[in-house]
Image (cartoon, rainbow, N blue to C red):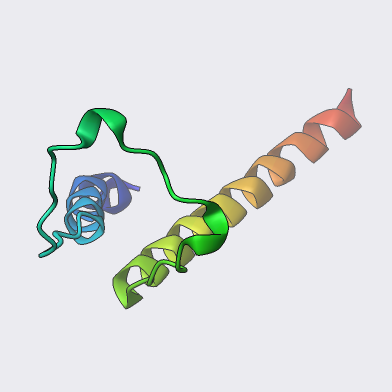
Length: 81
């Protein structure tokens, strides 16, 4: 457990750094007050990087493992009472 606790801040820094994609697109902010989002059917599907896919897989695995651990902990308690 100490390894997991010690590695958590480093993992967060890597995930945050990889999820902050910097765009090279120049944005015109003159019409910022009147801008409206285009219809959803006109938007293209966002491109998901390999880093983001890995991060989502890791987070999904973490949630699945945590769920199983909670169930394993609750079932014996429910059966003994």
